[in-house]
Structures are given as C-alpha cells and as structure tokens.
Image 1 (spheres, rainbow, N blue to C red):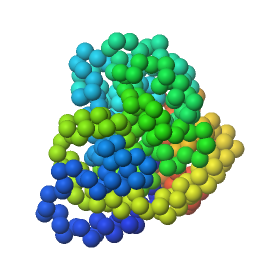
Image 2 (tube, one colour):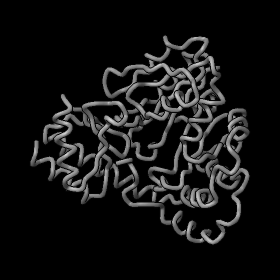
Image 3 (cartoon, rainbow, N blue to C red):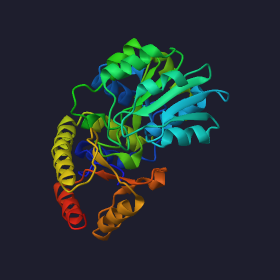
Image 4 (spheres, rainbow, N blue to C red):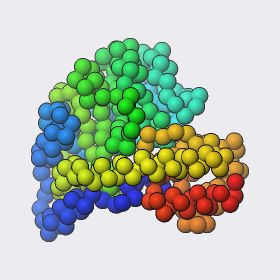
Length: 327
C-alpha cells in the first residue's frame, strides 16, 4: 500500500542490523560520516555534498522550517506527495498549490508564480502518486528560468525504478545550479522504510546548514549501519528494479485491457483515476475482500483515484484476477 519493496529489506542491510544489534546500548555517531562517504561514492560527489537524515521527510521539514522564513512561501503541486504541504502547515509557512490539469506536472506553470516571497519549490520525481516524471530538459529549463535564490527540491524517492532515458541527470544539474537540492531515500527499493534513513545531495553550503540544524543523532545506529550496507548491495537493487519493470509493464497492460484508465508509471506503483467515487470504492472493496490493500487517495485529499503498489508476481496476478471479475 505504501510502495514498500515486496522483497523486504536488502539482505546485506539485514545482516548488518543483526551484526550490530548488540551494540544498540551505545549512541550513534554525531554525524554518520561513513554513510555520507558511501552515499557520495555512489553518486560521484564529495561527502561535503551529502546530508544524511532520518528519512527524506526530515530534510523536507528542515528545509521548510530553516530555509523558508516566516514571511516567505513554498510552491508545490496539488496531486503530489502530501508531505510538502503538510510540512509548510506544520511550520506556519505559506504554501501555494499549483493545480495539475492531469497526472503530469508542467514546470512552466511554476515560473509566473515565483515572486520575492518565494523561497522553495517542491516536487517528487517520479511523482507520487501518479508515477509520471519530469525530464532533464524540463528541469534544466526551470532552473534557468527562476531566480537562483529560490531552492528547487527534487524528491527522487523512486529514482531506482526509472527506466526512461530522458529522466534528469539531477546530480550533474546540481553541480551547475547550487539552488537545486536532491532528496533520496532508503525506504523504497532498499526496503528500509521502518528504520527511517535518507539523504540529500546539495551544495556544500546547503549541506553545512542542514547538518547544523538537524537534530543531533537523529539517525539511529542501526539505520546508519543498514544504510552503509544497503547502498553497496547493487545486486539486490538491480534484482528489485528488474522485477519492478517487468511486473509494472504486465500489470499496466492487464489493467488497461480490463478497461481501467491506468497512467504509465516510472515508479513502483500505478495510478488509476476513476470517473466517480462509486466505481473507485467498488474496486477498493473488492480488492480488500481478497486481502489486497491499495491506497485510496481520498486520505490524501484526492477523490476518485487509487494507487496500486507493484507487488510480487503472485500478488499482481491476484489483483488482475480479482478485478477481471468486477469490471
């Protein structure tokens, strides 16, 4: 339901957790330097460009509360990850919401809304919950078009599942545009959602500020060690990504043939909008009766739509079998 990896945690990360479980009476590092170094190597950047956090949401909250002043504002889209708007409200910051005409972003819609009060732009790429994405040219055009004192936060929680070659090389763009902040997480393909570990890629100045305002030792000891092992578990990531690509295509094709309006996805889930809530509720209920839980996006303020996580082959077949009987 929450787009977890159906294969569970990275085996190397799990083995590392077991190895260090007897040391949890000791405090973790003030700053997880080894994890920063490994994240830096993985992304071909300096450790000075890495800020490690207790999940990417911690970085979203830090940016909103410390990079955006009380009289400033952020901009985001309406049908995207709800954490951006929630964080703004939590911290008493104004949040301008751009309405999407469909499942895709149009970054051109953001530019006219930028003003002297605008401090940050947030979006997920690929987008959650629609699975659509912004390509390299679109992101670069946005960065060129707006003032360089406005932070652009690209939340790339699902980047490892992307198969489209036009997806941005955001790390290279960040070297050109210091106002770009990239968010990554260990919660999805690495299977570590329950222990809260993520990181950001940004300019040295931004990282230094993030590390200054981050709660010391917010990254717990097991999360730190699990992250170190997970980011080096290349075989597991490749296996998970390959499975997702195959099953995503199969599920998309089967659901489309059943008559559902499925949006093509670059993530590990599929987005299905409906004409009305009655049809949506019928699908959600039928799946629930078979023990198949999907995300009814009403809880995020979006009626008439659901998000289906890509599961195991067996789970995906059960989804198709169930929906073939009610559609």
